[in-house]
Length: 271
Image (cartoon, rainbow, N blue to C red; front, side, top):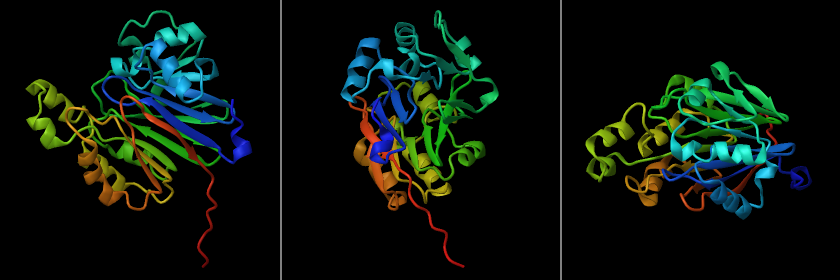
């Protein structure tokens, strides 16, 4: 594993792909690395990890946000092949037949836990899954938030993602494109509903309401290929992201490359 401390980096993250055809996010810190979701086959996952200089044998654990196929499809096979511990809520585990998971760890009542020095804070979100969770990670004073697959921003969610140093945030659809697009009415209602996915405008409103003064990286993720576009999402978010050091737009095929979250000296203002 790369010696992150030798380069001054404490925490970094990358994506194998982000969208309705498969999702997986890598998080790495000095003592370990984890994969959040795996919506790809084992072969495809291995190829995408190799592009980022990693292998499945490097993984400390796999975290699962919920049971939809674009997030969980490859988890059981990958975990079994490489004997990787898997963490998910009981609702996610019991929602479908995942077969034997030799190192299954159930996250009860969204209780925080530690993985090799990394604090993992599960966050309950409104999504049309049985017991979905998103995550905020803390390591040596740094905070990384992963927030996709939710239909609305609750006060609980807003409180959980304050003062992050990096956030991966869903901006799934443009309401006009969704309404006029090819989806059947029932699917449009699901995607645009309170338990579906965030629109560009909802993502922008969330960013306006949280403390972003520490935000080094904003990654805009889970962008719909049919109900959104890069230009439309950027136009909605640019007015509220002017102060963010780096804004990255994740894509389905390439995800995004490693982004480093670093310690920034914070000097209190003189009285």
